[in-house]
Image: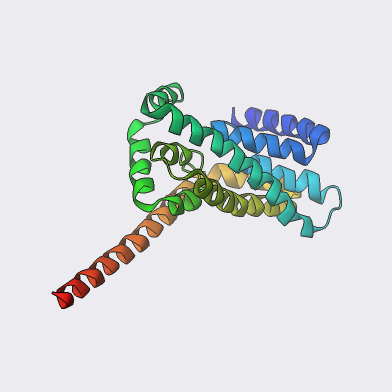
Length: 222
């Protein structure tokens, strides 16, 4: 079943890339980040291979390609952000029921976004399973849109450039990459969540240290 789905996705991507080039990549990333349906890992790696390596374009183009894809990601994420911000909790409840998302998962991310702000949005953009959902709590807690967009673009640019570069280097070994993804996807998710946990622990400890310093200063003043 996975192999059939994979071939369907690759055939569709080839048609879109042949017809629209990097505009097609931009559009796919808008759709992926607004809905979470299409897999960015396959889209971007395939784009790096088909639109750069196979056309004999220099690897120096990869950062520019990352800009196109990162901008599309930020635009798509902004759609979800504004749906959450304007529609509020009732709209999001309908959304999570439609896509069968655990409400507790959204609540947990929302708590972290409330605590850490745009920083967690930027980090979340490079974590599978979090990157497309982090826009929802960001809209619910009403992070200022310019901060949200900038944090989303920075995180997405890093993610997109990395995957496009991987596709450029390893695209001709697509079957090998496919087998690796099937085998190690759980480890990739686990690594992503560990990265997020490490980020939260680091900032939590920094907050505690700052709080302790402020208390010591207050005692001195007293």
